[in-house]
Length: 497
Length: 118
Image (cartoon, each protein chain N blue to C red):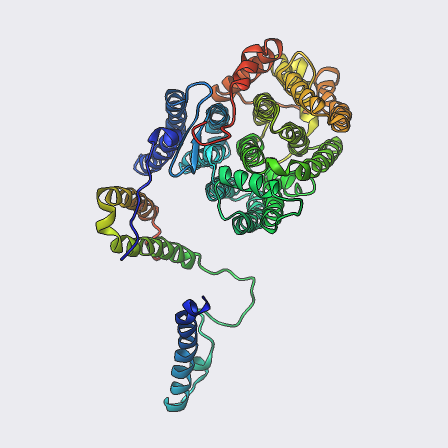
């Protein structure tokens, strides 16, 4: 007698955002296939429309304040944290596509697959932010990674792009190995892959007696391996080696997309794992993350000091910012969620803007991205110089920009949790970082032009830079609406909680 | 407890025995008129020995990818066929979605010319 098959109750609303974006990407792939002509801009615009539709769907199905919905045997959850993160990720994807549309045709790498790939990667990121089961976390990581392997190698036939794709593939496979092995160990220890059940298992098994139960030990080791897997994706020192090479080799919009989107989604999944499943182990992961965050902030920012190449500088600066976000998620359980979301949005605006400015200065067939190109920009293109200065100030964390409040909330949350040393290291490394961000501003405003540079403008770039500047300054002057938004974005700690 | 795994052990021994038996049988009974070509290691029709840094057609890779596509389809369809009645309309819908995604991949391959060999 075969066992009875129980079909799980399905609440489509929980996966509606993912469903929309995946369906749109699939249809878009077909539409692009049958679209005549060589011009692929229409595919890009359709992809933007898909992101807008997904955002509307996300808003339509968002749960009532303080509630959450789970479905598919509690494998996926839709809580206000997931909704906010999804909206931020959609904004990042929209920026990436807007700055790509003319970039691809200008550099002769225009292919219709680019846009569905970005949509699939975004869907993977959304899944990562919503999954409450380690298998789905792995699925999300792979979904965004595999699409990004292709996207990093998209600059055919440039060798550095192929090198970037291969490097990212090899290290990504390595990281996936750590991740899946850790997940297997956690399953061996806890007997479940469900984050809620792992948390409940740890609570009960640690409460009994004083001895450390063997099941919990397996979960601890598995959790460490999962953390290593994530460290590769979010490029924490010492797992960051691939970052500058991959960012430099990949097409600039893809580098921009990776530096914010991948990091944001992977951090969100890590935050959920830490809060929902591994909170009983806080005494173990807190010092580990503290060391990683300190190393990342110091190394990332010091390495960025040495870079004459703007793209590598932004890559190392993104490593440094991963360190600050790590401080944010270390306060998981108190203010981790809100400081993470605020920092992510502030960082996304400034970083996408900075990459967009980089694209305006990128020449066909050249791979320089030298800081020299920015010299004297103020005299020729004052608006562009002001925009770049805003992004640099926001990345450095200078008021009145959104970046300042991002850093402020992260440090305030860590201070409240008693992480005085980390706050000290964070402020110290911010001071180091200010040097190379301000150096770009100095070159733009004080120096004479080194060589003739004619920026390329188009609608997508202008709108992206405009939104990024306005957002950075508005959220820097009036952070209250955003603060209340992120404070209402809570991670569901229990089923239907 | 461990007895439950006896079939697996038997299966393991069988899968060890059968190929060994067949290979030794062909070695004993088969005619041995080897030529240089016949004795060369099998490399899918490629020259087996040569420099590693040479160009070779990526067409094999595409064929392998296509094979995986349909392999996965078959792997998912066998258990579905077994549970077809129990899953009912729900199962039909889910497999329909699965099949649509496969067909999309297939149409993509086709239109991109992955099935053309030249």
